[in-house]
Amino acid sequence: MEDKELAELLHLVSRRLRHGYVRRLVPLGLSPSQARALRVLADADQPLRMVRLADELRIVPRSLTPVVDALEEAGLARREVDPANRRSTLVMITPQGRQAAEGARDARRQAGEDLFAALSADQREQLRGLLSLVESQFG
Image 1 (tube, helix red, strand yellow):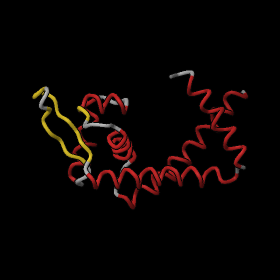
Image 2 (image 1 turned 90 degrees about the horizontal axis):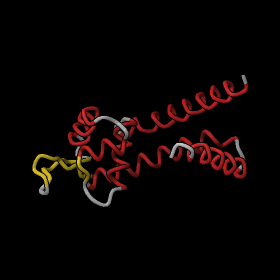
Image 3 (image 1 turned 45 degrees about the horizontal axis):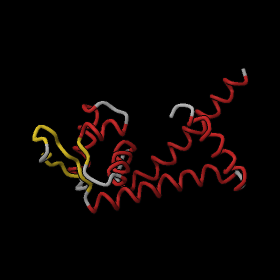
Image 4 (image 1 turned 30 degrees about the horizontal axis):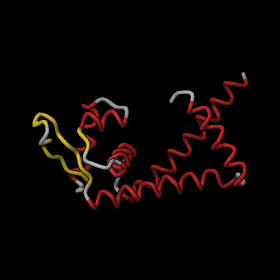
């Protein structure tokens, strides 16, 4: 019973965090999946092949296509043929995309700060450590 309650609490807190994040992404014109893709592209030291970007996002490549389409339409990313393998497509972030990625990072950070404002700095650090320990089990 206790594990179920803990899991339910974690689910509810995660939902609140996601809703706060989504609310902050709306003015930026981004969906969570677009923000995640921009974050991966911004953190990469070079353009990524579509397959690699899908792997980084832990989604199938066909699910990535509409995300990249939307980013490209908004001028946040662009596709190019990979000169090393003409059958592959590279995705690169644009300068406007880097700004949007930073805005999305700020949105996520602010959603977390608002959600965990009830905790002291020590409690937040303790929670971070506990969640990191759980997450590390799944590498």
